[in-house]
View (tube, rainbow, N blue to C red):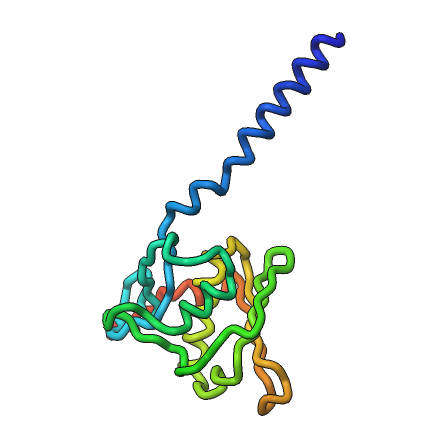
Length: 167
């Protein structure tokens, strides 16, 4: 009985140790930075929002630094930066499965659909980087009326499978 218990404990320990190597391969995976598509297409997986592939080794592991780098815009003209100049991440925290990002007041310079697209781009980028399933984006109150939006992975804005009505 003691030998059986010892074998079970040893097997559990070995299986547990094998599971620890799970995230080490992420270092070699590329990073997807989502931006606005300069020419909207229909019946495409990413009609309004498309991604630019970046090498993960170009960035530090600090999420705030990565997101601030992302907000500066794409490397080529094949993508449009939906964020206004000067925007920065004030804080970023992860709470359970939600990444909470507080942005500077520059986000309020864009309104309506453009602001929504910018938030959807940030949501897709941050959720992919962190593995979180939702995001809370805020601009502190006291800056005009402030701003807050929550999106999760099932949000229709993030699925972006738009297509025109058939005529």
